[in-house]
Image (cartoon, rainbow, N blue to C red; front, side, top):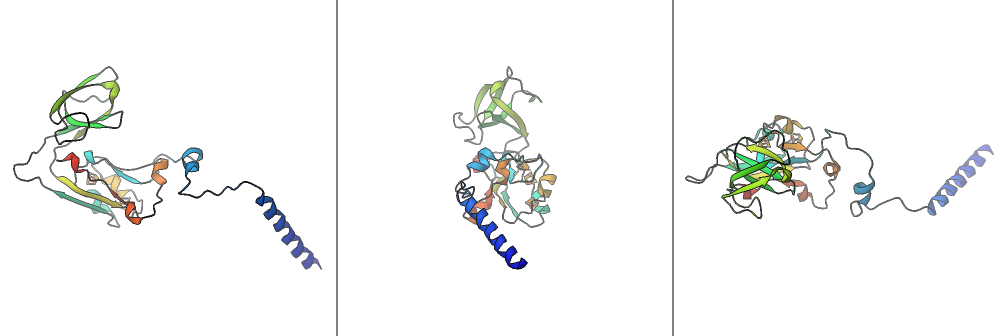
Length: 218
Ligand code: SF4
Ligand code: SF4
């Protein structure tokens, strides 16, 4: 009798819980079609140093291939070539990243300061020698720009190799971070933001991240 009582009681209890849930609003969201929750309400903090998606700031990459050599699963594919004979080879350059997310490649007059103050003025010679890194500035121009528009300035070493391909197959990546540790210019990093954990794709091809930017070398 006790077993029958317990059996009936647990079934009824389960039904009551099920019925109660029927009248509550649905909490399931159809990710990735609906991702407002992740973007707006996800209060979990991504810890600094989290190993998320890989990103290569290619303008700083010297195509040394150290990252590809150390990768234990061979998921980094790099192809580079020497410039054609007589082709233009640029010495070291500065890459001026502006706050509007554009950048100017050129040679800064004087040494770039460690800290950029808003009242500073920068003269950039031979701006965008390779072409189209900034939509409004013609190649070879000299540009004056004030510090309040500048986000950061980085040195780019002499261009020795042109990068034709820099692909990372994120479907194979182990997130070990070894590639970022050996990178001599620290241009290869792992995102430690919400952006770094969003991977949903319908096509596996979209998980092969392609970083080569031919406009940097033309
Ligand atoms: S983090 Fe990924 S790409 Fe980098 S070395 Fe490890 S497995 Fe290779
Ligand atoms: S180690 Fe860094 S600089 Fe060298 S090829 Fe890889 S990303 Fe580029």
